[in-house]
Length: 244
Image (cartoon, rainbow, N blue to C red; front, side, top):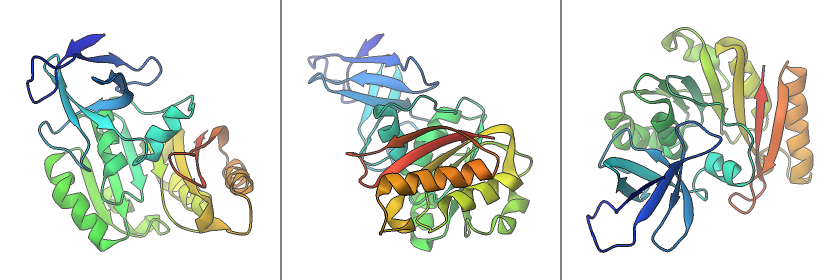
């Protein structure tokens, strides 16, 4: 475990403690001054935050506190996710990148040798992603495109990716993910699906919707490892982790 002080340099502050997460590569556990525990990643763009998250400099390294109420992946880890299939050097296709909150943390995890291909349909979100995030992170590539049409951006992604992360507000979320996996995912690759139940069927209980989406993935050749309900971090959402 590493002790240090915050980036404001206050030597009188209670020391902050940082240690590598025992289960997940390139993810860290931080104990703040008040004893609160948070997740964090090493900042690939030192001095810059993405969504107002706190920056901490400990032992000469700058970390970004990872807010589980702003990122479904962080919420899933705190809710007992067993596998985060990300590591240094990985190539990740991110569907529904929005303004870059979770993609930026994935950018931290895969590092300079990795790559995060960001697909986003909303022009305003993509503009914010490019201006505030991608401009400072050379391992991120943004595409203004519809995730339902992987052929529209396929020419920009050379070779296969190690993982696909999907966070889209579409009625057929698992199908969209599987269609992209058919084109881009390597053999043995992993997918992470953030299911928004209200975008799929408001008449069914969220837990029923999660099982429906998991069934779609199974029919498309995936082994579903885990379904994690994301409450209280995200209401009526779940994270599905699967491997093909």
